[in-house]
Image (cartoon, rainbow, N blue to C red):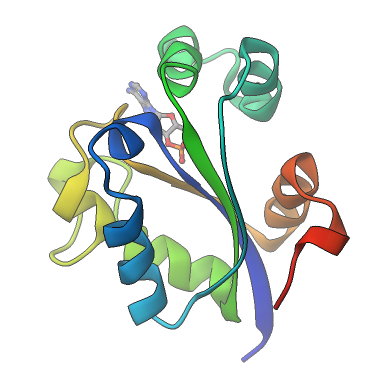
Length: 140
Ligand code: CMP
């Protein structure tokens, strides 16, 4: 197993319902360490750039306007196999398909308002972490 870092966002539907601590507890209980974290308001430009890979998708406009509708918490999580482990504890993108005990089963409202984002590969994790954090601000 390899020690990895992944990137996480606690989305506006979750910050609005004051769920940051409960979601962080799920991550920590699964063995992930929060090694950087900040609560920020994304701008439209930032959200469009961050989700650029989805810009041709029919839900892109909805996704961007949701992600700027309130504060988000951006995080770096560290642990053994952190990318896959984090995806497991988040659960399926669509909460109707998410397994019991996962963040999305517990808290997500819909496929769009699904409480959390996580990197889908180690390569994307590195890019997404760099989008929001300087190395000096990541403290294992
Ligand atoms: P996320 O992991 O943040 O990456 C892209 C997001 O697009 C995804 O989570 C979903 O929240 C969102 N998404 C995917 N499919 C749809 C959809 N059909 N309608 C609205 N949002 C979607």
